[in-house]
Amino acid sequence: MKNSPSMFYLAVISRNKQREYEEIIDGKLEAFNFVAFHEKHLELGNDQVMLLCFSNPSVLDERSGGLVYVECYPDDLACVFEKIRLDISLKNLGEMLDSIDGFFTGFIVDNSRIIMFRDHVGAIPCNYRVDAGSFVATSFRKMIDGSVAHPPGRMIVWDSGLFKIHRWYRWRVFSGDYVVELKNRLIDVFSRCLPDSFSLSFSGGLDSVLIAYVASMLGRSIECITVGAEDSIDFQWAEDAAALLGLRLRKVKVDQKLVRDTVEVVSRYLVKPTVMDLSIASVFYLVATNSVYGYVVSGQGADELFGGYYKYVKIGREKGLGYVKGVMMKDILELHKTNIERDYLVVATTGKRLIQPYLAKKIYELALSTPVDLKISLEDDSGRKIILRRIGKMLGLQDQLIWKPKKALQYSSKIQKLASHLV
Image 1: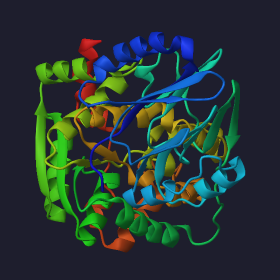
Image 2: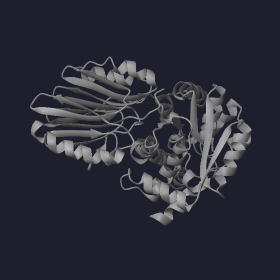
Image 3: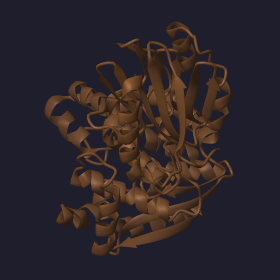
Image 4: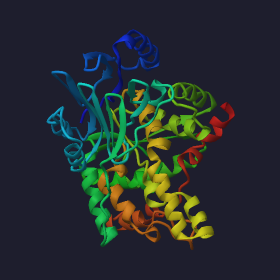
């Protein structure tokens, strides 16, 4: 798999604004000098010009009067996107995207028409802004003032100044043995998405333990990395889990100075981050900077998909399982806003690539179909991620790994406690 992250800044504007936008782009990309940007200019119809700054995409296919640009993984998806016709209809493009098993963000420029598309969950960041007579899009919100996230599972069309959003993704409902089906899908997805060698953000909790365990079964080379204060419980949990799994563990110990220095770096790239954002971003940044591999793998998304947060139990007790199902759905649909861009970006600043296998379409869709009572129990405070625990049992995980209680990483690592003094 291609291990270097991709970024882009696309502007389609009237020709008389070209110099103005070139200066704006240069100023915005100055903060992203950890990558080498290349430039493309295309003359379009209606007296418009396309300005594109980019680094290391999976696909950049320039053709007469237009181009196709895509960032995707697994890497074998590149050959699919290279076959797109510039004049493809929205119906045919939607059908093609629906058939793809993987993650992607991309766009087609054809004369005065731009079509942008994004995968089912928004695993690769993409943002845009529409002004009078111009369309601007980019990887990260920090690159464009006033930009908004491209909604996952949608195509954005800007054609001669007219703007529309079309939905291409509708998830497939599953009915059957959810536990067995999820076990099979986890193994299938991990086999397809996990690189031969990678660093795993490892807390000793169930999400990262399942990735490590299955990846070991599949013969992958794994380096587990745990970040925390010297007296954090994460170190003990991670040491115990790594020993039981027979895996290498690297411990990154933080203190007030390291957290301060890390927060200073990650805050340059985030828009209005909370203390929690800075804490989680700091963990990912430190995992990535200490990784010996080009890939960082994370279990992010499993809490939202399978009921990992205690708040779900609390809300369920107060308002019932029907209500908490709606809360879970809202959290899942907002993942691209709340978590994905933050984590993807701070890993990208280190030159590494972030992979989040729990967000794969096969797992995502089954999670949406899974009944809430297979995710959480209202009778037991530790009754969360029930279905994942059952899968761990089926796969032969030790009970102490399956049932180990776990707090959110920003608390158990004590990063948020250290970061809170800095904001």
